[in-house]
Image 1 (cartoon, rainbow, N blue to C red):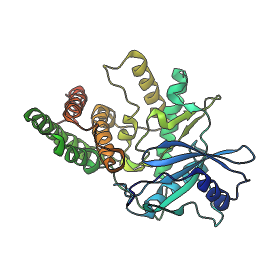
Image 2 (cartoon, one colour):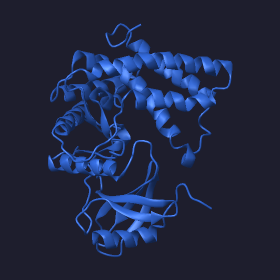
Image 3 (cartoon, rainbow, N blue to C red):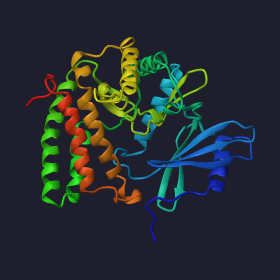
Image 4 (cartoon, rainbow, N blue to C red):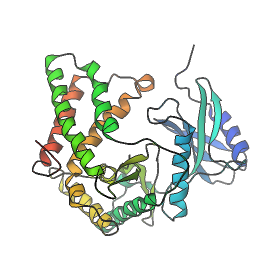
Length: 335
């Protein structure tokens, strides 16, 4: 039997970590999460905690080990600049990326600092706290402009944000209504593609981004310090798109909109956004919704496809249509 995605034994990973990183033994290993990677909590004999990431194979945005080195170089750059991010450790041989043999083949791994605190949605934060988060993201974007590496990474362009998600849904549209819904999504996708291309022409609007900056990837400690992690989807994209996972529209509850207003104010206090970029947030939210479906559709070989159905297509259309309607009248939308 061949394996697509194996789950490695914690005891074997403990020996690997002790050997590769010279941590004080015994090392305890606990699985934290299975997703687009396997993530483990590592606790050494001295009580210090770290996080081990074992990358899965054959992800659509990863072409080679060079893509992984890009991410680790970026984390090292941001950490060296004083930003709160999960920083990679060096292995005993001085490198940050290791390789192990699993039933499905070679998998890469890296050890990262533990992000103290709790997820930002698990703590009551004030408007000033959210402003500081916005400023943190803006400083990250500024440091990303200064980032240099010999490695390359993918681009979150219209192919990734629009075309790929819609293509992945085609096989699940069997009824006439679903076919019509998907056709309307295609027409909206053309509008989104045009907006993406126009935004890319704005100086400073496009560069390295985190690309999955939702509140579950943002920790805050007791002193209010933010730590950003899970840069697994990082690449080149629109800075407005990077903020879209935190954006809340006019129909959102008051608390959500107040939080977004504070985040944006904090961001703009550090880094400028053009009027077109600010106007584009509903469109970037539509792209984000499409991307999320396409992202998980790319993992059906190990996560299953039971969640993809015609109801999903209908709901996706409603969400995307709502955001595009909110952007109506903006110069970013051509009708």
